[in-house]
Structure formats: C-alpha cells, structure tokens
Image 1: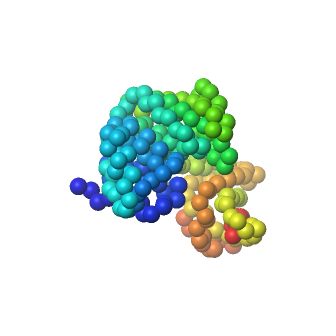
Image 2: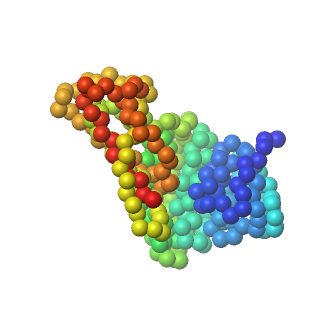
Image 3: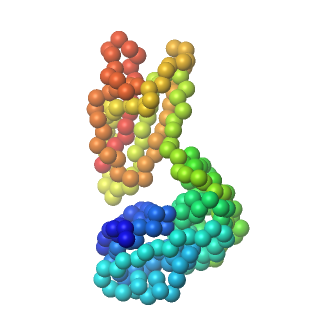
Length: 257
C-alpha cells in the first residue's frame, strides 16, 4: 500500500484541494485530522461520491483525531453534486475536473449550490480566467451557467470534460528577441503592501534562436496566488550570462510584503 499523503491539522484550502485531486488521480490515501466540517467536509465527500461509499466516508471523517482516507478511483460519466456552503462549487470545479479528465472518457459535472459568493471566484471568473489558463496544461473543459445562485441561493454550473491523455507543461512560445519581462506576484496581506523591484534570472529551456528584427519586443505577465519565492539577482538570458555589449534585458518583479 502506498504511503499516505500527510495533510495535517486544519490545512490551508489550497493544500487540501490539491491533496484531494492528487488522491483521486493517483490513489494515494490522505492522512488528516478529524472531524472535518463545512466546505472542507462537503468537498471530500463529493470526491468520494465520484466512485466510492459516501456513508462510510462521512462516518470516518466525523471521528476526532487522525484518520486515513483512501479516495476511490473515480468513474467517468455524469455526476450531480450538491453543495450548501458558499465557495464550495469553485473549489469542487478546480479540484475534481483534473482526475475526471484523465480517465480517458468524457464526463460531466453538475455542481449545484451558491455560485456567486463573497471572496470566491464567480462563474465568469472561472469561465474567462481559470478555464483558459487550465486549458494550457491540457484540460479540455466547457463551462455553462444554467442558474445563478447569489449568497446562499441555489444555482448550478455545468462542466463538460473531454478526455485529456496527460497533463502538459506550460510553454511560453518565443516570438522574437526577449526585451523585457514583467513578473507580478499577486498576494494577499493584512499589512500595507511594500513594493520592491529586483532583477531576476530569465531562462528558456531550450535556448531559442532570435529571429526578429531589432524593433521587435516581447512582454509577458505571470500571476501567482501564492507568496512569491526568493529570486536570483544575477541576470541571465537564454541559459547563459549576459554580456555587457548585448542589449539589456530588464526584468521587474513586484514583491508584496
């Protein structure tokens, strides 16, 4: 039996969501501390409902102390899932879509419950923001809002999933000489943000050949929902150190403390 994935006591939302998706896709059991409540509980039970014993999982997750849960292998097809907690539908969409898409058969998720809640992505955020970004990793998904649910009102989002043979790495296609890259770290803080601009390393693997004229330029923006990591201050381009005689590559990073 595989070693369990240690989720810990009161994990962050992103950690729990990622662990559930990984457990569904790989069969690795989760070790966490009960009892679970609220949207966390409803999300795990929804994952179990994709192919396992719902009642047994509910009883296990209601216990106090450390529990180990083996998520079932999900079944392709249509799944109707109900959520009462605001924000749970968005979490279910980005957590359950990947394991279902990797099954090799089409699936459909009908997510019922509030879908327009404070501090959580709305349908349009998911449709116009998350879905196009996820498609660049190989997820083939279509989203439809059949009923809007504001606050605690009942709503429904339908997600249609085409088979995705495998997740693909994100590739930024090179067009011309790289002149400037702006990296923006979007993080949340209770303090007044202090913005610092530092130079970072820009690497391409493999190193592309410049093909454009001297007037060409490229621009890219990378957003992150996580706290930014430490970055290197030595500037490189194309996998090698820059030469003072070559055009400068200016890279600005907004670091919010």
